[in-house]
Length: 447
Image 1 (cartoon, helix red, strand yellow):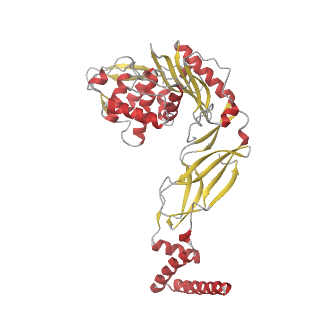
Image 2 (tube, rainbow, N blue to C red):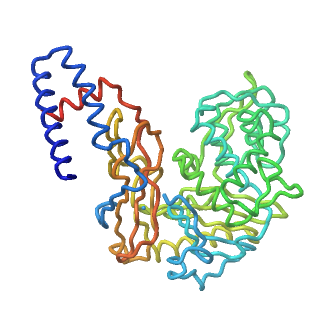
Image 3 (tube, helix red, strand yellow):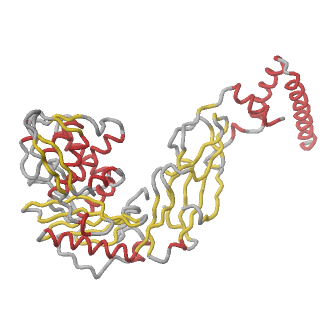
């Protein structure tokens, strides 16, 4: 009985298809309406509405041609088993209260000394100030060519500065250059007021962003790191915010400029002022491209330094060194160790299509699965060939679909063993297809 019933259904479906094609070829309006109704009924008959994308996935095996920025930061001594196998550097002697070496791509910590100790960061504070400005630029809140008016409060700032007068104007880009190169305290206040209206609101946002980044041993009280009670950070936290700032490529242009001449003062009283980079690492170390120096009597000599060779960027943080050159020596020692011992494998570039997923009743009916950011993984030198990747994507999903919606994962293998996975997201928003679009699509499939 069951078999006979199925045969009857098949015969009916065939008859409908024959009628369907004939009506289409004759281009009858009535036929078009019937075909559209059939398309809808046929889609339901085929069980499209019963599809559950969460239960239908396909796994593609390891693929060495697909090549890892990691979405989460790992502490080598605490979380990442692979880093534990690599082992933290044990023979490094860094003359500082605290120090840390981090791979910027994967976030893996390669060396640490008192990395979580709360210490005054001096002008290294400005890494967060610059980060908030760059993130405001990225979301379109402000632009680098905005003209910023210097306030009385900004002009009164002591310490390292650009010696600007109240009422004079500079572009936001020029003020950022002054912060990056000359550690200008007055420029920090000016950009904070431009982005948030007041310094106090900006500082609140600094602490909010620190919490978002997992900076558990940091509290900011001002934008520039001038000595004040309850203003502190740690070597690990500074590496976290430095890593985020390096995601904005223009920052490296500022950090690697050695000298730049600007004009300061009100119109008619302008004078030339030469900005000179305080980070001697730029001239002393091959590949150096950042980031920020700092010094106060309480903090000692501090540095968040970075260098890039090939695909690999390392961040070296030094806090509380007894002299300026000792901090640079300590950073260079850590960087030398990192570049001599490790390599970075780039797994995927942000926005790079790595696969595709069919979208049921979508317009269009297919969407690319892309990485939401650059993906890297750290390996010991000579072990790159052991890294392969694979995809795990939904077989099919149902419209509508939001841009950035998760479609699956990219899986990273080391010598055939899964070690990490990271989300792949929809490249674009997919709307539901209209009845007419579904009808045309059905016609094309039947001809």
